[in-house]
Amino acid sequence: MIIESNIITDLRIESIQDLYKLKPFVEEGILKVNKSQIGRELGIDRRTVDKYINGFEKSKTRKCDNCITLLAR
Image 1 (spheres, one colour):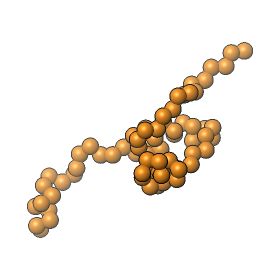
Image 2 (image 1 turned 30 degrees about the vertical axis):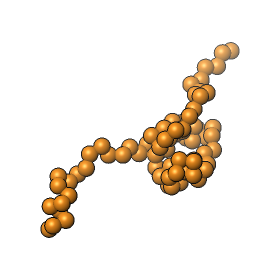
Image 3 (image 1 turned 90 degrees about the vertical axis):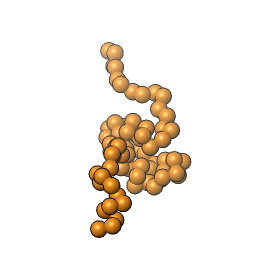
Image 4 (image 1 turned 120 degrees about the horizontal axis):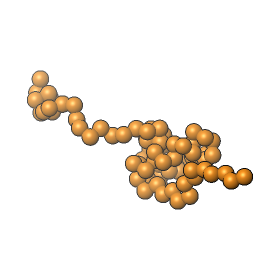
């Protein structure tokens, strides 16, 4: 019997954009992630680590057209 699995053997987390790679491991229960330690190494909050693991993507655009005119109102 040959068992095939899609296991990533080389996993590097260099920035917060790489945290999505941990989601399959966390969902399957294969890997217990220490979010506080990851946060300390990346210099971000542990809640931010959790948010990015769950698939958060930062918005590429802002919603307001001109922020200066909004402040003058």
